[in-house]
Image 1 (cartoon, helix red, strand yellow):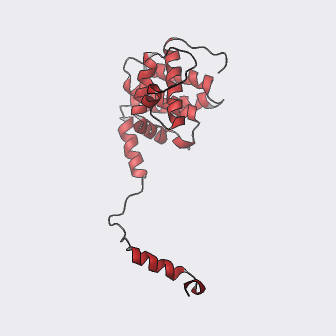
Image 2 (cartoon, helix red, strand yellow; image 1 turned 30 degrees about the vertical axis):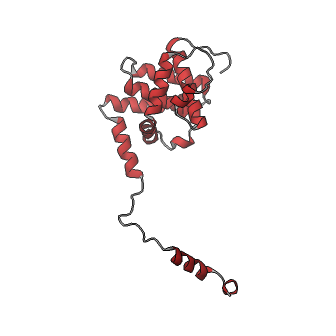
Length: 184
């Protein structure tokens, strides 16, 4: 990203991305990162950056579900961290920030992907966000549908739990598995 300078809302989005990235890398929430120490390229921290980072972090499960069911052949965990956090941030804006037009959220995300991501990042995030935008325009509740799809993919729990063995039974089974020469 050397040499790239952002201003206004683009700078705020860049800062939000950096906060989300740091929180994920440290296994913490954005709120924890904000309360402790954080690093951003340019400061001071914009209020909109805080709003977007906290909002996306609060909806992480829902946003990841939308990403998972929308991105073809890519699990969320296998995506580059920058792409994953860019998608979370843009989806949060698309779903929750009424004063930001969907096209603006997508365009800004694509520009940040060009600055921070890999050579393929901008096309990837544009494709995923474009699919979500089309579904939203068609009137779909993308979050509810994604959560339903994710729940359907999870293995169902068995109705009856397996019988648990007593400690004595566990010990007896362990002894039975030992060779004869060890038991003697």
